Structure formats: C-alpha cells, structure tokens
Figure 1 (cartoon, rainbow, N blue to C red):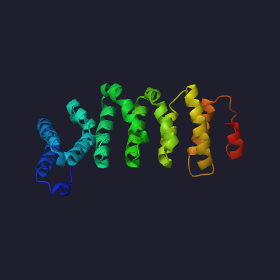
Figure 2: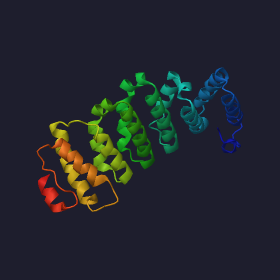
Figure 3: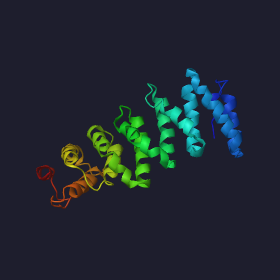
Figure 4: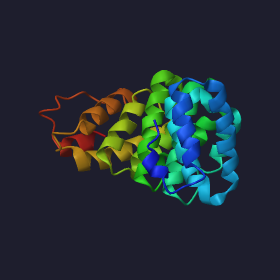
Length: 234
C-alpha cells in the first residue's frame, strides 16, 4: 500500500508506514487504529506535517472509516496552508470524508466548494472531482453552491474544469434573477472562446443550459447556428 522508498530517509515515519502495510494487509483494524493515534500525534511536529497528512490521505482512499472526527477536524486546519502538497492531501481527506459521512455535509460542504476558484489548478482539479461525486450522490446539494459554480465558471481556463462546472450546473433546475444575469454574461464569453471548438462539448452543454434557464429562447439547429446570431439571441 505504501511505497517505503518514499520514507527511507525519515527514521520516524518509516517504521510507522511499515506497520501500516503489515496491519492493513492483515485487516488488523484495532492495531491500525492505535497506530493512527500515534501518527496523528506527530502533527505537533511541524517538520512532519506534510508527510503525515500525505499518509492520512492514502489511508482515507483505502478506508475512509479509519478517518475519525478528531482526525477530520485536525486535517481541516491545514487546508489553507501555504504548502500546496499539504493543501491537496488535506482536500483529499476532507473530500472522501464528505462523500462517506453524511453528518459532515451541513457544516463543511459550502466552505469546501469555495475552493473551486482557488489559484492552484491542482486544488481546483481535486475540488471538481469531489463536487461531482458528492452531487451525483445527492443532487440537491447543487442548490447550496450555485453562486460558487458561477464564480468558478467566470474564472476557469481549463477546458475539463469548465465542462465539469457545466455538468454540475445541469443539476440545477433554476437560477434566481441575479444568477441568470451572471450566467448569460458568462455564456457569451464562453461561446466567444469555444463556439468553434468542435472537439469540445462546452458549447453544446452551454447551449442546452441556456435553453433550460431561458425557456423563451428559441432552439436552433446547432450545426447551422452562427456565433453572431447566437450572441444576439442571448
């Protein structure tokens, strides 16, 4: 499970990950739990934080039930670190926890979604993955983050993440007046950038969302539709 080569130069963590490999392979949950307590206690040592959170992120992917409420709360304190690796692994732990544990959603979901506009693409990529998983599991959650999705759509430059945001917006049944105004302006900007990109689904999804949110808008044959005509209609 753990690549021991990554820890060869760390005399504190190497024996711990060796034990994790051994205990997890034999499903010795009680011993894993005790070892986790020891690992978490090392978060008090600043020079070990990045690697400890990395280990916890691997454990979260392996078995999220091993991540207790206490661990979750400790991990949350690192999500705004200046270290991107630390932040990404913290997001991974929090994301898997939110997917698995419904009781964490109310207090944490909105704050988690705010990182959809983070300066780091790696952070945004991870947030997109978890938001898609969470909203596929519970579609009504999208109603809590409509503004964040529009914020993301207004700044995102990565095609895959733009598409992800449009997929998330497809779970929205309606937008309020201010959100509709923003979406219309964002749509115009995106059409200008991607209308002629035949390899991308962005324009197609964007057009369908405009039909949904603006039901009076006439539907057109997309193959025959010209950009200038579309921009006039919006």
